Image (cartoon, rainbow, N blue to C red):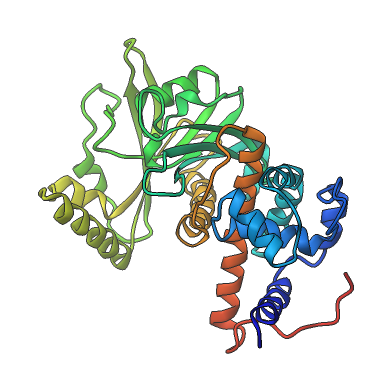
Length: 373
């Protein structure tokens, strides 16, 4: 079997994992509009996957697509096709998310929930510049409602809620990298709410009497794994005011705690520092700070909402590790958004492939069924 035959066989297998109506979605979203030659959904998607899944630059993608007789495009034409395919890639992501039945609590539909995150990317080559993509996905549509690209280092380039455009009524879900007083304060000033994973050692918290929050006393009151508790807390701001909220905590299982401690030990060993007793204590709990009303939202609801961000994070962890972030069209927000959807699509496809390989069949893909294009 020559190389082209093997590639075609692999592509036929991969097509069995795509959403059933992926070709129709290409036509519906005008992803193929403007193509004069090689005007097929297969050729277009395979060309894009060379760039998105393999991490090749636009120029190398064009060369490889031409050599494989997929498309005769220049690097500029590949970039334009990526822009044209933004809606198509988005629709493909939604279809794959729907297959995973990734859903949240019913109460989540009452608000505009935004899943906030950032990730670093590096241009190809040893001297490639590092960049940070800041983005927000609306739930449950998973529409990217905000995207900004900055240098990975420098003033104002870190993870912060203060740089996001926020509207009244928004509820922002973010991980511990966004656990800062300034960022949370900015969100509250816009009459929005937060559910943020706490970094207790990186943010100052006070109790109702204005004393430093008694972490050890509170956490040790949670006796068993899976038990949930909450406490009122205040985050003091620079102007003398304070953000009122509450801490919702759940105790991890012994296995999850040991896993967290092993990761911490690797980190401190690598950095040559000692493991603080407080760090060991915090490893046994998931700690979330929220400004949502206690009357309307019980602590288990808050933690259930936070799971939405956690589920998305699992997908993005996969795309960071497996999809391999390659060349980023950093100067063009439109292209960057399409690229982001494309990377998410690759990650979801990999998740589906792995799930079938592990549990469906020993040969790693489902039996073919007769399905019309």
